[in-house]
Amino acid sequence: MGIVQTLYYGLSQYTDISERRIGIFFKGLSEKKSVGAARAQLLMLMQHDLAVINLWTEYKYKGYKYLRKSTRKKLYLNLELIAADFDDFYQTNQMDGAEVARHIHTIAPHAHVEFQRAQLLRALTDYFSLTRGLYEYRESSSFSRLLRNPSEEKLIGDCNQIVTLYAHLYAKYFDIHDLKIRLLPNHVALHYGGVDIEATNGTFANYDDAKGAELMPIEELVTVNLLDTTDSYLETHEVAPEDFLQSSRLAYMLSHSREIVSRNLEAAYGTIINGLMSRNNFAQALKFAKQSGNMELLAVVGNNGALYHMDKHEFAAARRFAQHALRRNELTQDSYRAEGVYQYNQQHFHEAIKAFKECGDRDSVRKCYAALFFNEQSALPKQLTSENIKQYSKVVRRMQDYAKKSENKELMQHVDNLRKYL
Image (cartoon, rainbow, N blue to C red):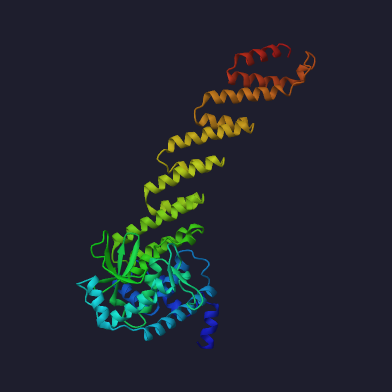
């Protein structure tokens, strides 16, 4: 890298020209752009830098703030170490291509595989085989945990991540377009020439008859990763709704199947919203629920948010959430009643009266006026005489007003007795 480039990337948000090329591609995507041209460009980028695409989009569109520039640089160095280590393994552990093809045919009889490509895929499955101890499958893992120095640490990743790394390494030797992805319920596998590659355990498989199995072009892996929200990082960190919306738009524009994207997007919204609610971040959950257009999710957030804020004595907020709940009228009335009780216990009787009036609780309103009566009465001296009572005429008049509003005959009678001396 020349001096000018070194200075540029020292100040840029990008680590190098690969990231910049990928960043410009995603930034330039819009509904106006030809879908075919966008996918062709994406495929070219995947051929050269699939792993970089995954890491950049995690950082830019999924809120992985820990993937700062210095961290990404280190991970790219680790990626180079993995590629070099695999190449050494590949050169010294090559199986006969025809033998690999025969093995594949025992699993997928209708598979049509080219010997050299089958040989490479077998090397990948052997390299990442669980028996070697290099790789460990773990659900809800981020891509960064997979990009480690293979001579020092175990590589850890889930199905999306390890499939991405398989495809990235494959593209170092052959055209990535040879590959497809096999989508299964809550799972992703690689596919080549009629046989599936189960990257999580380093074996060949046949998912043709598996329930819910769908075969998609390799580009679909990018859209799957864009909408993947199963990472444990997201259980404790927030995703900005605008970032998630942008990742959803990108996935929708690039996907070969709007049905798959819609299904994955719905699941992603559910995951994020449930996570936010579990952390009592109902404001963010409400933003995502509105953005999702899912009225059922919106109603759940509205209901739970209203109950949470009621419990926190944040009654105005509770009523804002209640407007989105199915039981909006009931929750609104409950919030006013709860506010009335809270204000009464705090001896804020005028505020309590306002709240009780909103929910139509006349008995409680009268009880508040009685409490105000006794508050005023406490201002009178213990020795009240016909001489000093005139000094407290305003107090007595307020007592009279509160007694009437309390509709308590005994209180009204007591005030009438006092007023005789005014």
